[in-house]
Image (tube, rainbow, N blue to C red; front, side, top):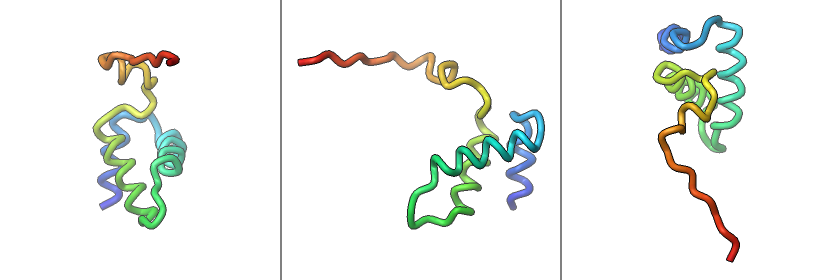
Length: 72
């Protein structure tokens, strides 16, 4: 049920207004054509339940080495 997903996502987001803003932005970026928008929204809420969406991306990818490309 979506309400369970919302309450799970609220564990990382301080208030519901911010959750709505972050979820709408993430849904627009992750939505694929020919899929239901509701499924994309549910997927975003599940991701928010497991990770902090308001954390900077640099902190989440700090463990991965950055590759640099060189001109040929």
